[in-house]
Length: 576
Ligand code: F6P
Image (cartoon, rainbow, N blue to C red):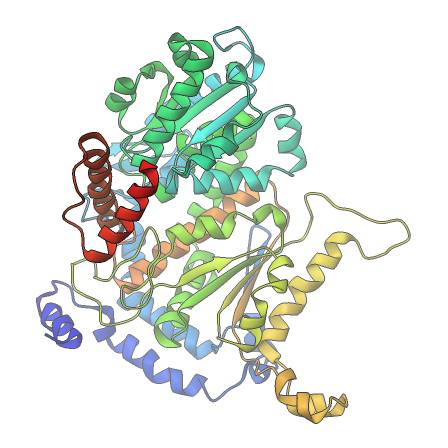
């Protein structure tokens, strides 16, 4: 059966239909033609339009006037949101309904940052008291470690932490750690301490993590929602051996702790359940940074009070997302614009370009949570080719997210963004630098220099440069086409007042909810990740073959010609 036919056959069976069959979707499809007639150069001349395409929340300014969109486009996108029942879906999420239907789970990561007196129900029970029980435990534990009240097996204070985890149990905490590293307040609290992350099963990552560390002064945190992830468990066993070899097996209980939803397996591994920090199945791995997954290692490094500010920032966005009208709602606007760019204008990628080195791990974190289409590309965590009802999608969803801090990115991939493919860009800037530098006698600070680029790039993309302009500049004829920029390349700018723990939490919240908005409009389940399972099970088959060949000398069997050849080469080399 052809793909179109296949999709249509399934569509007939869909309990709730697909968004692309609705009139607002069709209306937007037709509208693409109108937009194609107007260049961003002209759109940017309309000051009223530009004014309407800016919105402010809690000091964060979103300027989306450089999107290839008019006020009419926006109106149509809001009508699409209505057709997709966006408001109801957001409410269902906040009300703790099991919207992750394929795993029969609620999606309540917002409860992780709720104040103590908030009420958020999951299955009819307020989950906030359980959240705070764990937060209080983290506070006490991290203070004991930081103050030296809790010491290692040889009586020395534990000043270094290795957090073992992968995917959602790694990228979020890494992003926040790297963003806080130069925040003056956080730095003050981190003095004399180190936090490292061990994610890759590659033994090189183990070697790099333990390099220069003394097991006597090191605490290892094993972070795994399931406590079964092959990479994390192997790394955990490796570091358990590292500690036991240096300090004896009895030292493990003083030097290893865990974060997991599976406390039975934690205990089986040999970690004292009293030193385990729980979270819940209503927290998706990639949305878990505000649980003990992130809060524990970050509190060990920076102290609980700094991390609490991060949680408050994310919570402020939760409130905004839930209550602000859609026309002023940052995650909703960002989500709708992404849908416009991907599904209507046909731009499959999105560049996340923070003009702050502190945000260098932001794009890698967002990549795992982004959505993609099964027909075009594939990324780690949230790739869906079917609707929430299991119907194959006949339209493009999601985007390929990538990014690099400016200005570094300008010297690598921006060429393609300016003159190659059209890639909608998110420019993220900060008014007040974490580390301002003013050179004597210079009126433009180092941060000003960075931000000059933040302000210039969106216009370069929007306006481009015409052959007429180049001729006026006496550019030689043979270089005119080379130096011409078509422009009309969409971007948006997000300007944050500063980059402290609170703002970092806000940025996280904005992007987390933006992803939910996209998924809600596309009608897919943004909260499961079946797409990663196939690779995992095939790796298990290979692992079994290693065992059979090495232990029992059994020949390679059950693989295709290509894999058999590769495995033969690998095992041959190993033999010699
Ligand atoms: O890569 C798939 C995945 O299951 C992610 O969803 C998750 O964040 C990661 O692996 C790690 O899983 P765990 O926390 O259970 O070790």
